[in-house]
Figure 1 (tube, one colour):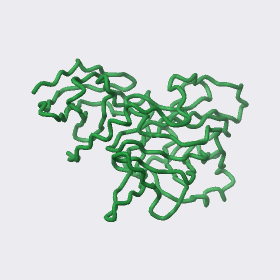
Figure 2 (spheres, one colour; figure 1 turned 120 degrees about the vertical axis):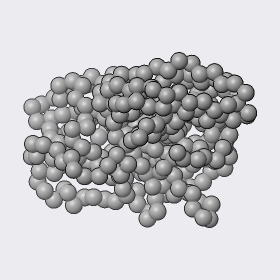
Figure 3 (tube, one colour; figure 1 turned 180 degrees about the horizontal axis):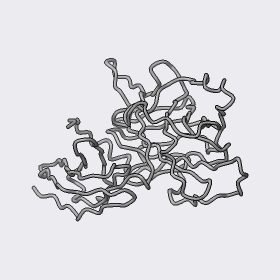
Figure 4 (spheres, helix red, strand yellow; figure 1 turned 120 degrees about the horizontal axis):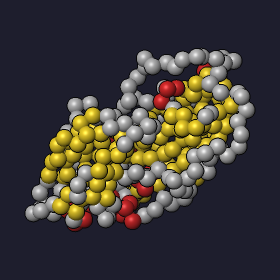
Length: 296
């Protein structure tokens, strides 16, 4: 299990809302316009697996998708859940007449991804594209990417200076929630994605998990008191996820594969750590854990 350096500066992120752009995770997913026979509507949501910073701001300028309009089935033999993205153009796929690149309407601007946790998300892109298997998502970043740690701003760039983030998705990972309407979630793993270099700078090597609410489950609950600065870890032999509860103690972890997990609470200020075992996660459902009250 990973060991963290305690940094109470992250608490500032709890009191700050998304600087620009976050609009309701309860936004209506239903089709806004009728679809032609050769069209489909995509909905891409953005959420966060937290890390120990005050804020992490990403300047998102464009979202594109690669649609294979010819292939009847998807490719499922590549990669793994922790190697889903890389920096680069990846435009060579557009040379095939079956491979169609299309842009999704978005609200371009700066996102504080640390605000998107504990079940919070934002609709990153939503639009109509040609029918087919959607295999890649490309996010273009602007120049205003930075993080805040202990109230100090640090620039945040890719190691090679690239601005296009390519995310590979399996076509079957898209959830068809209405006829011709598909959605998925991009879970930005901040802890694995932000790397501190030896000279005190930070670089961005994004790790993004892809999930849908229908194919995964979630765990939620409340842990108190707030001055224990609790950190939640849920884990089993194949999966690990983290949560930083809000000030009222509420937490939620999404995108979990079905199975049985242990829930570990790492506490500070002389409060005792605690572990709950046998927490069952079921596809498409939320598992509510009884309130945890920490003691010294």
